[in-house]
Image (cartoon, rainbow, N blue to C red; front, side):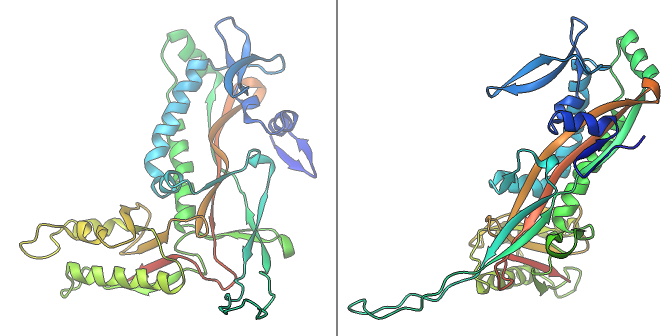
Amino acid sequence: MNDFLLNGVANGSVAEKLMASNFDTAALRPYLGDDGRTYIDRIVNNEAQSVPVQNAVATLRYDDWKLMDDAIIKAALPRLKAIADLRAAGLTFTIPNGIGTTVLQSENLSDINDADISMDGLRENANDRPQFNLVNLPLPIIHKDFHFSARQIATSRSGGSPLDTTMAELAGRKVAEAAEKLLIGRTDAYAYGTGNSAGTIYGYTNYTNALTRSITSPASSAWVGATLLTDVLAMRQQSVANFYYGPWMMYVAPNWDQYLDKDFKAQGDKTVRERIKMVDGIQDIRTLDYLQNYDIILVQMTSDVIRLVIGMDIVTVQWDSKGGLQQNFKVMAIMVPQLRSDQNSNTGIVVGTV
């Protein structure tokens, strides 16, 4: 069974439903109401409403969907640490119909000359203007599939026991992990398109414009808390020298935790973590599961450096195959990091490695 869109034409039952519903994923989330009719949820006048439909056959009840969605979100949230920081800081850009958009186009800006200072204001200033470059950002779908047989669903319904959500949890976790790794740069840079329409998705650690710093390994016999403080201050200065003045979020690999929670100095009353958080401009220190070795990332948390483009939050859709004997599910999301720099390739991201 193949489902795809080619030149705006839908091929396959799943693609046809999405096209017919203007890419509204609710069309692939029908549920059985208490009256035996099929419903989908719609947002009408900013309120969620159950809307009866005639052209969809539901196999799951509302409680089945809720159970599965809760399991998926519960499994996904712990994996989305760096993404959660962007959401909390308001560094997001939402595309209402993201599934119907493949590329986001934006521009970077050049600087202009400085202002003059004169007593009468008659001196002519250089009449320049900024230049703009078009930048393309691909918007791929992150997705993971699982399925139930019709017999599993019938057994669950007749026995009164809920569906086993283990596969749903695993699928939700895999989608969240992929989104987090994309932001951190733990996956290969994702490229799409050719020529003027080409674009690439970078993460923190594989961004070509990111500043880099060689830092001292905490496993070194000469390492003390002040050693890390010196490295962090140097990383901050690199960002400032690039005209990015904070505030910064500091991300560390899990290997750092055992050192960050040691006393900063003998007989001291602060840990290394607490002392570094006192550095002006550093908002917090976060441990990211997918950072490796002793990597450290310093990120200025402003929209001109990083934002999360959200074309579709994590959602699960369903369709049937094999004559209805198999119910297929796809957990999917469009959450893409947009790392940004000016036309001089300056950015507020500093990556420290041993």
